[in-house]
Amino acid sequence: MPADLTPVAAPEPGSVLDPVGPEAAQIAGLTWFMIVLGGLLWLATVVFLVLALRHRAHREPRASDRGAKAFIAVWGVVVPIVVLPVVFAYSLVVGVDISRPAPPEALTVEVIGHQFWWEVRYPEADIVTANEVHVPVGRPVRLELTSADVIHSFWVPPVAGKTDLLPDQVNLMDFQVDEPGTYLGECAEFCGIQHARMQFVLVAQPEEEFEEHMLALQAGSAEPDSDLEEAGRAVYLAEGCGSCHRIEDVSEGAGFAPDLTHLATRETIAAGMLENTRGNLAGWILDPQGLKPGVRMPPNNLEGDDLQAMLAYLESLE
Image 1 (tube, rainbow, N blue to C red):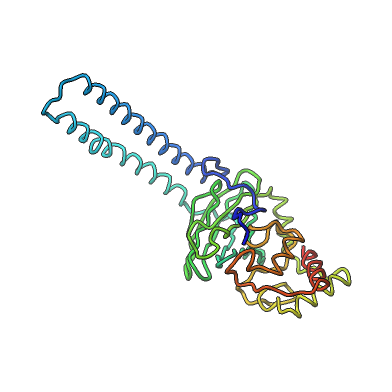
Image 2 (tube, helix red, strand yellow):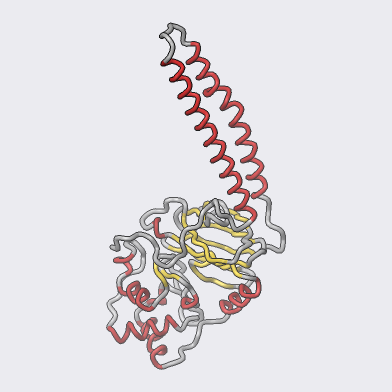
């Protein structure tokens, strides 16, 4: 098992305090408000205690505990009575505002959490992909989130808050990204073994670039363009990979493994864990349990020629 648990391919984790959309900006504003307010209260408490201790050091001990009672009354009763309603009211305003339904022109994306990976569907374009969510910049997006097995939580810190994915239930997340970029997303709910590697990539693209990407994904699987790729497809089928994975017009899959129809277009494999390179793909095919113990994919004992052929075929799936 690799010692470094940090994904090697995904971008650096973003911050809630560096928002890239209106919903995230409101969450960041609330976060800053609570940080500043909490800091001021902490500073006031420290100053008060220091002054009280210095004052007491220069006075004769007295039997009266009026000062202590006053301190408890102010900081234990009065301050919470004033501060907590303010924080609650601000949180309520932000919560209501970011929960408003997306407008009708919003892009609808279905995300299904599976243990170990994310299934991504664009129902209007009849597209199925995995572990990457592409959205247009400046256009509202509605995610319909559900789970096929265990509970997950969808979270891209610079984009929006967390939303749980529950079996047999669809939760909604509405947001907009105003800055192009690639953002790391992760599961924010412990979902079992390999939860720390349950990640994905959200790619925000200009509208024209996004539409081009959708058109590419709408195309069927690429036909082998060489004898090596043809041999790779034969190995893929002979080894039974198609029993789990779907490749359009090649194998139906079983629904519990990622769709590979356009595997070569993705930046990562293994749910954001590895960069999508030939070496990483080969390592993943041969020993997925060694890289990500517990995943459902079994190891494969392919001969060298068969492995190279399969890699050539998978790399052609753009």
